[in-house]
Length: 454
Image (cartoon, rainbow, N blue to C red; front, side, top):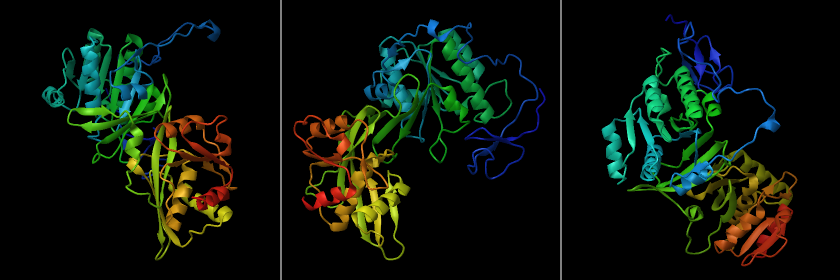
């Protein structure tokens, strides 16, 4: 088969360029163009049929949807992120930094499924069979009837899958596979796209649940073409510092469940263990009340979490700095401007540092009120009450806007022993919640004035 010239493709958006350049012409991201080999003719035996399979023309009203049965993996936190368990014919893509625990979690899940007499297959493209067996021995797993295949050729893998028809198959990893239909190297854009499409087509036709392990780039996003995330049914990301024992698994896409759901794990000698009370990870234990600390209730999917927000305000020696860890830095600058304009609190000559304890990343604006309370507490060197929580979005006009699922946040705070809550007036409960006093406010200046009463 003759090869055409080798253009360059973007690993982020899939755009192509005739020659290499620093910036992608499609998405504008730098250093994402990689060389790919384009085939001059359509390879024999290569199918371009629908991934979900063809069907006869019919009206939507005639289709009778059925609830997809779930197969729990036996790892409770993993099942939570998946939306209750694995779905027959579903394709799951899980990515994360090297050594963070992707293979460990999947090996543990397959071992539990094998003990429950489910036919499972672990396909290793990065490690030999002996290395996988050593990991299972180190984790003290009862692998039982779990089957293993060390192979990177897609056609051979599909042959084995077609013959064995396992209930669950793990591909570790998709970047190591290569197809005879293409002559480019494993891990290239064309190979990753083709291999993932073929495996997805097999999953839909056979009912086998396929779990793909994906590499990530230096920015933390999944490596390979962005179309990979569109093909699969579920996209999961491993988060956490490899120097810490705690791991977060977050769902960014899930056709069978809720998105933005998280699972919390602790890495132990026996592998990953689910954490039943994740709020304890994100709350520091202070012997006495300290200035610059405020606890907020954030919502991760269906789970409310209590996270401590810490702020340090100090005199600036030159240009004032605004740094955040786990929060959006641009939003901090906006909040400081609102604090000055509507509450008269000046931080223009101060360095401001804000941190979310435990390495958690908070993207929702409901953290605004807790951030401002922590900043003012540090600036005045006056601690907030120890059993106080706060949440609410701050608008540019100084109003405190409501947060979704406010009642659930308050009930979670009360369950964990917090006695006071500062919330937007729209989130005030209609009926009192036992054990917690709710202070409902609608302006930033009211929240700062309330601090003088404590």
